[in-house]
Length: 311
Image 1 (cartoon, rainbow, N blue to C red):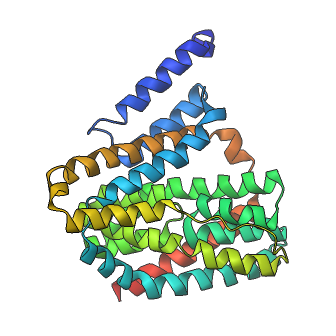
Image 2: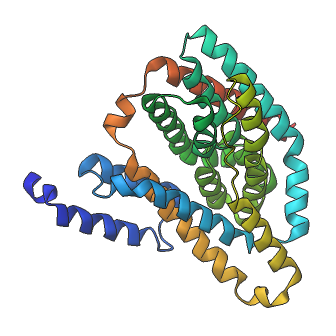
Image 3: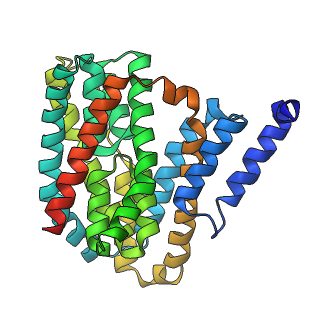
């Protein structure tokens, strides 16, 4: 049996079958993530070396697709609702992350990567500030492993807590956008909770992602590296364009529902891919101190934002 699963063709076939299963209506976001992780643990990921670039591309395409399910007034209202909480939470996490880094005696760059990933948008934020602060490959890998691990936990924990506290769609969508690191997990958790939560979470999270730009500028001054280029998340512009087209051109009403449905399946596939890049070896590589800092930051932002939202 062991030799059977070591056959490359068989491993690739199983991977493709599970990926196709994630494109069906019967697989939710958490299950897609769990299938990917289970595959990585049991037989390994035969496409791991080439998968990361497709994860980001598929996520961006799916997010743009979700834009066709929104009207401009809904997006503006959601963005306005989450603006104050976004600003306060980003400042809180970045300052607290600096303090915790000193307390736990973490490497400065690793501490900054974890803080930026928690404060803004997970792996995208880490990818944006990495060329500026120039961390080692190990520090980038650790930061991403921690963020993706906590994202995976959030995908299961947040909906359960939301139902337990009887949060409304609006409350849960806002909480997801602020408390969960990566956009893929934000959309996955919110989509499981409901369509209204999904709309709010997607809009607020992408507005939050734009804070990569000012944070990157500040990062250049903190690390005294004015020659670095700022990585701008241009796909957010396509998301806004999709909203405008869906708002002002009635012809899009005929297929907007179909587009958003396909986009949700695309997000499930993205989470399957993300789960398949995790492994027991990756989780073991996470040190106790970096994990402690990340968990404290995550609990702080999750509990703090939840108390604000329900008050």
